[in-house]
Length: 165
Image (tube, rainbow, N blue to C red; front, side, top):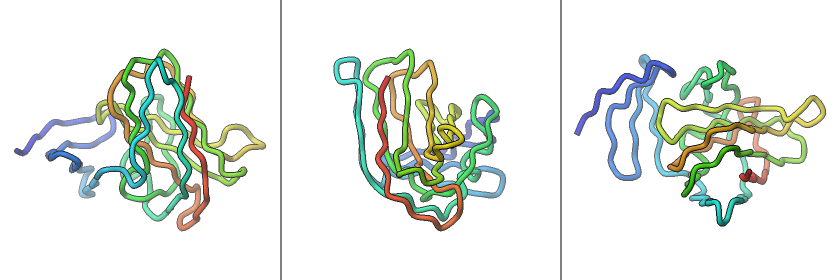
């Protein structure tokens, strides 16, 4: 089944879906967002925190997925073409924070969901800590795709990703 639904907020068109596979188009670029590289993280109001540890694989520009997030922030960095993690929220959350800990390496984050047009991007926590950070209100129950990237192409950094209120 081919779905042509314009998502002008981020310049993507959802071309089709099959369980575990979404095909998106942006101008002449096709973005293939498959199942995440490192599996699912599930949180709920009863168990509101999750953590995963992996490493970045920064070769694909995150701007291929989204140039800016819903606040107009530029989505910077390089990651794998597939999302690194899938976050499943079983409940709505008034506030959530995603924090990367790579020992201070220059990392980035891009979160897409629960619908394709909702994008959140983050990078430096502060001037002294270059680990990526997103703290944002209004997280609806649903499935989110998370890319953890490096600020510079080709860099690999081991990291822990923590998600919670």
